[in-house]
Length: 125
Image 1 (cartoon, helix red, strand yellow):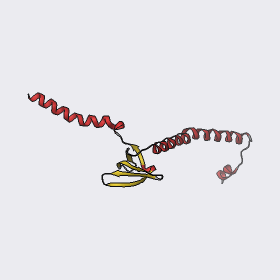
Image 2 (cartoon, one colour):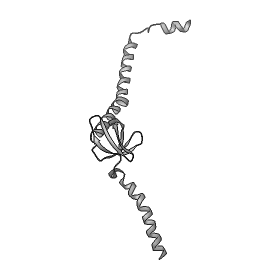
Image 3 (cartoon, rainbow, N blue to C red):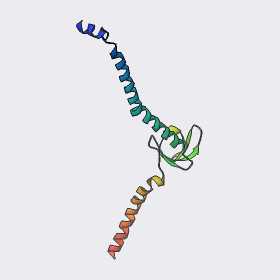
Image 4 (spheres, rainbow, N blue to C red):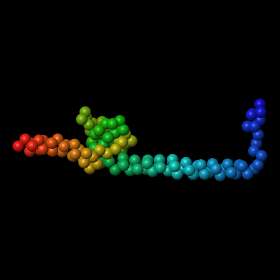
């Protein structure tokens, strides 16, 4: 019963309530700059990315599906894959997968076996 009376007692001084309001205000400002503002910037960047996609762009969807944009519609995209054409929402596109972005990796993996063959043929002579 002693602990119940401690929790139900009002604060003795009136200065604590103003200090508490100031601390809550500081916490709100901290949350805004640490959580809310970066999230809004990320959403804005994602929206501009989705709006700038064009027909022919190779993309990766959030499900991991790779394909090429065949049509751009108001509410989504028609993605052409090896199995056919599928319609997806704009939010389903995760990232762009073009040669300008990943061309160096693809070129390095295809050049290595060719270089080895050339080296082997010159060594055999």
